[in-house]
Image 1 (cartoon, one colour):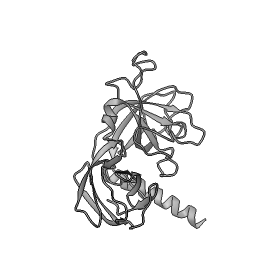
Image 2 (cartoon, one colour):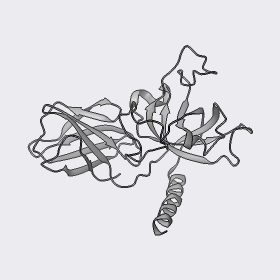
Image 3 (cartoon, helix red, strand yellow):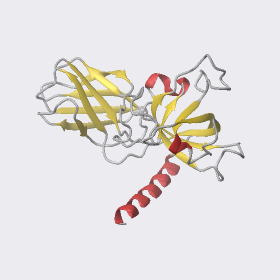
Image 4 (cartoon, one colour):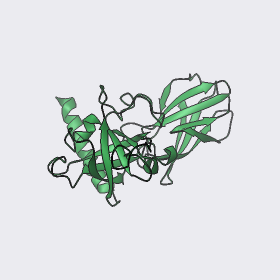
Length: 250
């Protein structure tokens, strides 16, 4: 019971914080859903997050159409959505949910943008999990009109760094980013190096052609809002590929 009360309190505070932090106007778009047995939208996707349940985005994640996805630069950003202007499909009161951009919804130019080609450029569209969709609209709907706006991301714990690669290729996947959610620049520092800029490989995977083994690692992460967060010695000297480490939070 104590754990449940903490969970409820956290959700209340989260919604209050979102409302206070939001400054953007509502914009119009459309939304559909994809069926997944585990409740999440994807297990792999264009942002590189992998198992969304494991990294906590879960069912509250979305695939974005080309114009919103912006070649992966918006991976990790948070959007508040509500179903509007459809008396048959929208739930009463137009409840809203907050989703994390976690995948790309590809265009289908063989179909009309009004029937099947929901993600054709320049349509603004969100592909959601069925569970999240059901919180704002009736499951029977194929597609619903929505309003959306960017909001700040509230995350539990620190920014997470998952390392992968080989002896001369180093890559880090960055997840659980608060505030803006988007990462626009990353630097890494070993105990034997200075700060080294990393390049975006794809989604939120950042790379550098280095051998950083046997060095504790520090990271400098810059968000789309221009704030920089530095986490020193996040990974210990004996870190291994495949491990995830937690740093500070925005």
